[in-house]
Image 1 (cartoon, one colour):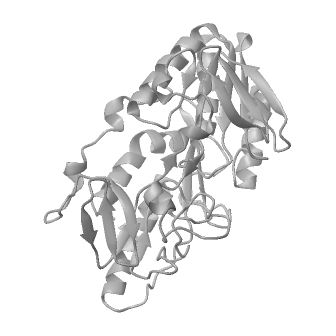
Image 2: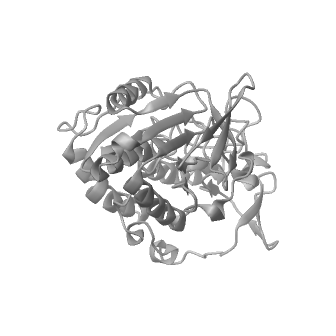
Length: 355
């Protein structure tokens, strides 16, 4: 949506259409999780007891860590972000479309935290460059990717491939530069290095990716990791192979909220949700969880309109291609077709319980 490929209808559906019969839907946000008493507390104070709990609460976008940021201003004065909502994605495309007509200085960002769909900032960068080329304004433009990390993607072979492509495409990269603040009116962004050095950058177009963490209900509960690399974000403490909680065996996690080495993608959920469902059945029946999840993650990485790479990998960062006709680090039309036409039906089938 944010690059003009999909309409809003492609990404919006009704929750009610996916509930199986005899499911009681409580239309309230969860504000507290109390695993010691097997209780969920809703925002309106309703206390719901459980025998078994599956936590699938996704991520919290921590916009407060970017000084001056206003999500409501997305689409104004070159400010964009694909993450907050379909409306923000629509506003992002309108802003990108306006920017590409004349060109200018484009800044794209990446935070240091884990985030849902870590490939999305890279896709935005590739597609912005492609849109500029289509409009004939590339020679009037500069595109720079600012990463708060020492890389742009967590799998080294993919990272190196993307950087090589960006070099060929004239996309500049600045690493270890965290977006600390933004002046929306003046169209200036402030970045800071690990040593504390601050740099201000003027922009005509900026794509902001917020730092992400677990929702408060998980982060502030005893279900969160208490130590180790996942504790800072308050991610759910699950065994990476079974996705069962390490201290509360009647609790499981699905999706982005899990504190695991990788896996904040829809493809991860497509493969892991059936495993969690089976493990829940096993535990209820008094059996130990019998399957092992390898951390499968897939990123259909768009490099331009009509061309993409289908990158699949596991917890170890090892490439795990599943389709013999697609080379994972080679861009082509078939991977684009999969992303554009085939993945949503596959995800919807999983959502409806058909694996």
